[in-house]
Length: 341
Ligand SMILES: C[S@@+](CC[C@H](N)C(=O)[O-])C[C@H]1O[C@@H](n2cnc3c(N)ncnc32)[C@H](O)[C@@H]1O
Image 1 (tube, rainbow, N blue to C red):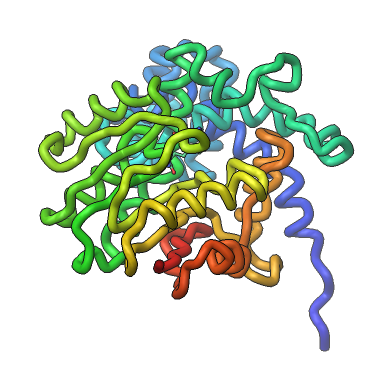
Image 2 (cartoon, rainbow, N blue to C red):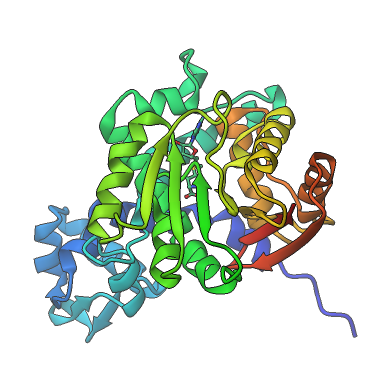
């Protein structure tokens, strides 16, 4: 007997913006950071977050039911506490904090996705640039707080992928690494921490350099991780045995993707590797829903930019002269696509 169709997935997805907004708002209120290692009643925690009494139990208990907050007991005397995941990843004082991406989702993308229909009909971006002239990066880099928010978001989405990449990629054969569009220097920091023989360069636009330098200093890695500033469409890339690009190629149209791949080819020695870390779409475009949604997000952010599959990457890199390829799965929807010169 065939199973009856169920509307559960349809309804679950349709309502999922409710749970998303509850979690994003908790991060915006710094709930997990303020709670820290304490155990507080709803009234105590509600007071710290300046919540209306009507909202307290529903907000905190929804977070409990969704699995983002722990609670001992029931009723007004119950105490709320951080789960191990909340303490690790959503308390801003944790070294493995990823909340920056949730802050940006709430502050920017939640609104911009409301204009998905316009994006689908026009092929045009729906972000800040919809009403102004400047590109996303010009907009972000015009104000330091926006830059910090964006770079924090990148750390949030990339941290566990970079940790996994540093663990799984075979760095033994290589001495130097350049991370192109390196943002806060996170990929270089993770690779240098795990591989004491590596010298790394984090390359990005000039306004990003002081932020990267601060993070590298704080990680105690200034002797082996340096920064270089430049524009990857105007300047040659620093020469290195391995060139990484974390969520760089997906920001651009096909012509610019190919330009970046050619620049990497020119900067690598024979045997060197170009690595693209992305939410790589499966070759048949059927299963990596997050990668496909990320590509729609690139439509919202840039219009003509798009995510791609391992097969796409292999085709573009073959044209540039790369000879061998592999895909290393990282975490969740993310993989490292590797092309060897
Ligand atoms: C989507 S972020 C990715 C950050 C980081 N690689 C990661 O995966 O978390 C894109 C990065 O490219 C940098 N970028 C954008 N345009 C650039 C350009 N023309 N030259 C150099 N870097 C650029 C941005 O400053 C930003 O750090």
